[in-house]
Length: 436
Image 1 (cartoon, helix red, strand yellow):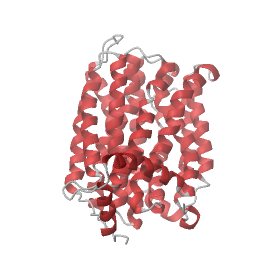
Image 2: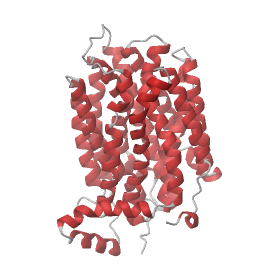
Image 3: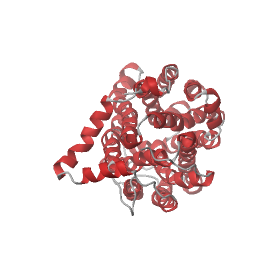
Image 4: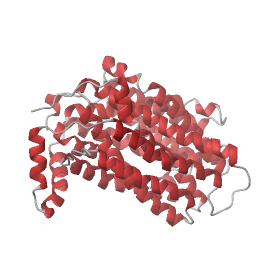
């Protein structure tokens, strides 16, 4: 029997999503500060993609496994999803504190692996947590509220980078060392990672499982350890076989969308070194301003997208937003003024708000409640597989086909966003069409 979920107030949905602020602050540092740190520690531009392979690999393994395990978890004291994103937040917090103290490139790369495990452990159950709590009519609000905190978290992370450089920077770059001004952003992230998650954990009770779900959970607990160990892998395999057609179509959109996003995050700093003649610190600060701008837009428009998707449909708003992101990337390399180049970030911010909210609300409506965790994990696999492909292939494409030119890299990403927008027009949320 399906549990009837009560509607939540605006502030209850707000409190439920506050923890995403800390997770996304960490993600913002990964977007704008990790690759500059690699460059500070001596990495060559052409190896940046492979140095970022931690994200795709850990996301591919951790998120679906945690999703499947949390589906079969319940504690009257701790709940179902909360233990996982709390442990992930603590792990991420420790890594963020240690990151700017990295003495060498290999140490920073190793920390990125651990940080990604923590972030992925927190991210997936959080997506399922929102779906668990909200009735179908409030799912768009819930996931767009997450999108708002995505924008706010990344905004704070990136604003801290260029503000701290302005306040505490200056002086000549020393090869092989990380500037002291960059430390403060990571220390703040270390605090926010735990503090915001604790806010949501303490403010939001989870809905207990139904009698049928509880019976299934207890049956799972009674299995021998080896059977319980194998069960998440079996769950993932079965869920993929029975996956709604909508998710297969979405995977094609995600292939181009996330491949392009990873190119942007890796090559926006090298782009400003090439087009504006900046050193690494100046280019990193300009990249942070770009990210700050588009995340301000994301935070502002995230909830505005809710009535628009209701009126015009999620598919149309999503596709149009992706096309706008493509236009932004086509424009950026041709603007040399550090202020005017922020203008395309308005389109990028609208696109980012749509990407972080609309697909999750669409998927959450068509997957079964008792398997929401594993399907949210599979949705993340559709993100990290394109990222993994990008890290393995784009270094060679950048060097051999694009002339090791960061301008061409950003334009290449724009083409992929345009393709993603066309493929998004094939998305239809119909329970009859999407039945497994």
